[in-house]
Image (cartoon, rainbow, N blue to C red; front, side):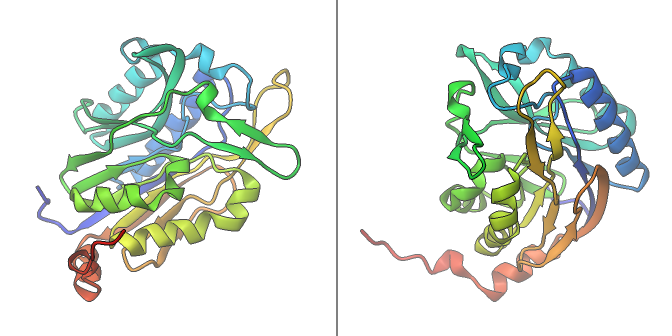
Length: 282
């Protein structure tokens, strides 16, 4: 059900995470408190908020089952304390149906600290990038198989993660299922971020007539003993349903706060009512 007010203040948390869960929680907590102090009612963190390091560094082997994860327990308590809705962009958790791999899981927590929705990243990242960066996320992450639209006081929230961004059919489905806001938390690589990040985010917003919220990891990740460092692009984005960029966090660690006029969703869909114009084809 939509709340009486059509203005929603959101917070986008941009982190420079690493392999140590305790250090990541300390960083995330400070930024979440900052966003809440600025009046944000829905706060979103990046992909792999609990652990991130160089590819192949064994981070997924440290994943715990959801019911045992201390990071999740602590952030649930924080959401309740602050009285805010909190989207953990994703946590690396042990997959219940495949203990040899992790689930890259996005979790939505309400203002009472209750889990309201879960989404496991469907599209695992595979790429060979210039400079020798190689990724094959499926080796350590079990892909999800179900799209999720969570009910919130501000309407449907379509939950996705990072590489999902490149599969527009998923977002079309989420919008058809009632999503008015799309979450795309990420740890986007620097080369692909420079080339495609903003363009793809704007395209997903325009195609669906929905708000896009994309909190991101930024900078180099990994400890001194983790081997080749992994780097993320940053530039957490909020994009309006007409494709306009409402906020760009740029580089660095930050808590960016932006107001969403939720009436803009209905206006964008009224201007271009593409939902009623689809035609069958082979």
